[in-house]
Image (cartoon, rainbow, N blue to C red; front, top):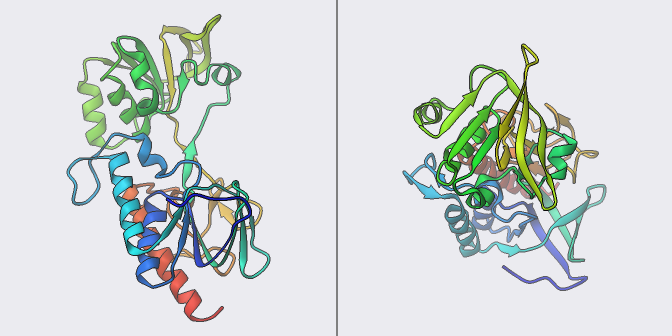
Length: 318
């Protein structure tokens, strides 16, 4: 990874913003097309897979650690010739050609084409008490913070793959995990549901939602989660030391939300069967565009598509 100095100026045929499976795969393909891409890693190098542990659905690996997989992808992109820079793009000017990007470091990047692969970030419920205890018992990342709750009772909120994966992972540390879900069935993959229901440390509370995190002020820390039955209105207080919010992710669209066409609550819209956005020369791939599949392998596939689309765009000289 190349260090940045202030006010450095870079130019590239293809600027890739983001470093998850979509970004790194785009980098591999763009490099092989001799486009000499620059990839700016962003605020979370490696993306969401760096905050997960076992990945069991990556083709060719029956089990691989998420951070290890991302390090391999980074090394692959670098070996192909991608210039990888540890910076955060804070502003995009897409009204002029070449396109311009401003880095948090002060660096300026100009590019003939841009591939957006900024991914998605964890959603929060928006409760004042949730915000108060963030980092002090409230978390959205079990692999980051699970270790701190050894032999403690924990609550996980959600019903999709993320919630079930978090709950199962937390059983490595916690004495008990309570999964709180506002419906009576999970959206998670069946294999994950089977593991959850069979696990002796996990209890599920159906038709409930988190309404407040209860805790102490000195020192700041969680002591309980107050949940409400969405049918009866009955309130229940669950004693716990940690509350993990796992209700899904929102696309990281801040750079382009007022520039590109969006759909389905903020995902960048691309043409069917391609990665072309509403602005020629700007391509998008991965979780930034995908509200349906949201898998590492589909993100990687889109990264490939984005690089090939960018190559065709540049070959036309447009």
